[in-house]
Amino acid sequence: MTDHDHSHEPTASECADFLEQIVYFLDNELDTADCAAVQVHLDTCNPCLEKYDLQRTVKSIVARSCSEAAPADLRARVMMRVRQVQIEIRES
Image 1: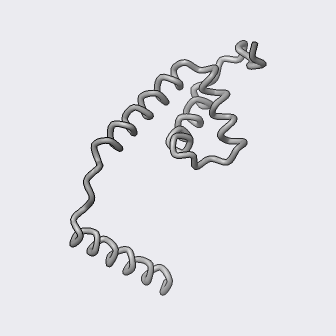
Image 2 (image 1 turned 60 degrees about the vertical axis):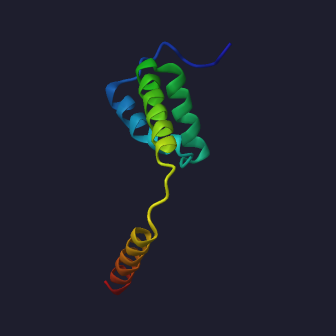
Image 3 (image 1 turned 30 degrees about the vertical axis):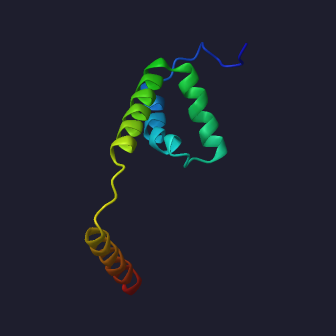
């Protein structure tokens, strides 16, 4: 038996807040308190749970599909651009 309060239906605003956090939740980028809050919400809100499951499935498919490494010249160009932006940020 759980201690979740099923009498409270989440509002659209509450769901929107939690849906914004789902990506971070999937990537384990939330602190413990936020992670627990998202989990409780998902345990009590089927529409958000369905959206979470969809996001998790898409993330899994993309991860499996992106097993190729970028060509060395592309990686070098990207790293050069990153360094340029870092220099620009430091100088501003």
